[in-house]
Amino acid sequence: MLTVTLNEMQEKSAGLTHELAMLSRVEVVKCYQCGKCTAGCPAAEFMDIMPNQVMRLVQQGLVEEALNSKAIWICATCETCSCRCPRNVDITHVMETLRIMAKHKGIITEKDIDKFHNVFLQSVKNHGRVYEVGLIVGRNLTTGKLFRDVQYGVPYLAKHKVHLLPESIKAKNEVQAIFERAAQLAERDFKEAENK
Image 1 (tube, helix red, strand yellow):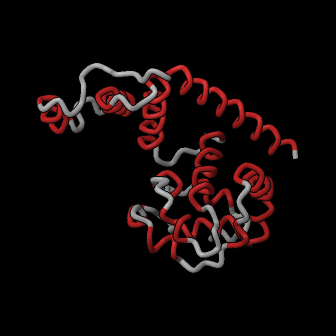
Image 2 (image 1 turned 90 degrees about the vertical axis):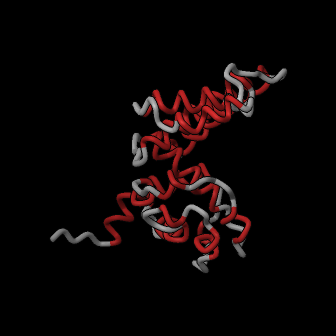
C-alpha cells in the first residue's frame, strides 16, 4: 500500500499553490468550511468532490488533487456558491482558475465538457452571441457523437425558435477584441505566476 504524507503532497504542489494564488487573487484561507457553497450548488450531485472540499484541498496546498478532480469541470459557474459564502470568498473564480490551470497543464478530466466550452466560446467570438445550431453541431463534431440530441432540435427549427443560419451582432469586432485582450492578459498572468 502506498503511503503519502501530507507534507510530501504539499511540497509537490507548492508551486501550483503559489500559481493559483497569483492567478485567482482570492484569499482561500478565509473559507472556514461552513458548507454553504456545497449546499446551494446545483451541480454538486454530479461532482466527485464537493466545492467546499475543493476549497479545503487548495487551503491545504493540495492543488494538484484539485486539478485532477471532475468538480472543476462540472462547475457551471452560476456563482451561487460565491453569493452564499458568508466570508465573501469567490469560489466560482477559484474553480474557473483551477480549470484554466488544468487546461494549461493538459489535465482535462472531462473532455466533452472542455470541447463544449471551446465550441461555445468560439461561437461567441465569431458572432458576438451564441449561434445555437452551430453550437450543437460543433459539439457533436468535436465529441464524435454526430447525431446526439438531433431529435430535440427539429421542433425548435420548425417553430423558428432557433435560426438555421448564424446571426451576428453589430459590435462583433468589439467582442473579438475582448477575446484577444483576455487571451493576452491570461498569457501575461501565467508568465508572471511562473516567474514568481
